[in-house]
Length: 316
Image 1 (cartoon, rainbow, N blue to C red):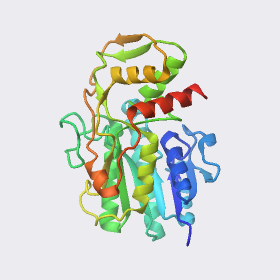
Image 2 (image 1 turned 135 degrees about the vertical axis):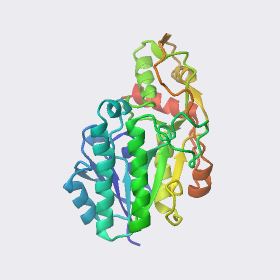
Image 3 (image 1 turned 135 degrees about the horizontal axis):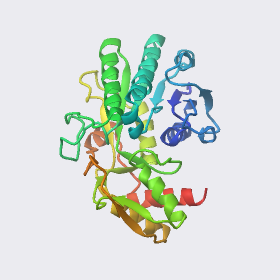
Image 4 (image 1 turned 60 degrees about the vertical axis):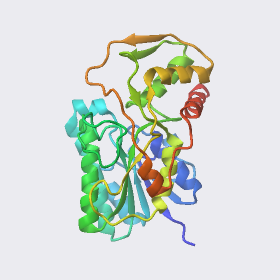
């Protein structure tokens, strides 16, 4: 039996390296492509090949042309929402331009290569719908980052309908876990872990009652393995091949802090700061479609996931 080949873009990063670990453990031949702007070379699995390249580059397109990949797990991105607000042109250049570069390269090979795209369930739906958000809800992102992620999904749907590109879009809730950098909304977990280790107070904005759907990185990685092997439905509307990945459970910032301190067996002060203008109050996704269509459901509870994450930071 021929070994299946997968390219993981962004595979030196927090989520990407965990995905690379999972597909490698599932028996795939793995190549990681990463610019190392935010990724870390040390996080690339020992059994994977490595290509240092930007997803916007000819080198990235050449890697796809020459790699004979069965699957491309596309996780490389500009991930900082605040950066997208201050420099939306850069965000769209990386997140849309880079993604289209990869799609065009896959199309040019003529191979039946599946693209699995890391989209966002936390930023794409906006504040005009009542959670839990289902895939077919109207999209009204509040940030250039969310707009770029959804624009990429629209390009994928176009390539699927017109050029027969095989793809699945996975819309992540707030991913947390070992190797995490303190960027994005789920970065609060990494920040809180380090401050508890250092014995410093935790800062909560507003009353701390704002909620997010926190999903463990290992569960997200497992979804990529399932998506790589699942039959896809014929190309149609943009939501048809999109799947939310989360827990369908809301956890407030105060609850998050309390669970972390309990798992760490260590108490630190909890300070409140002025609420941040425009911050989303509630965010949680429905995962019924992922259960039915991918055979996926989260296996790691928030308590277990936070304990594992804290232990990783404490043992670094």
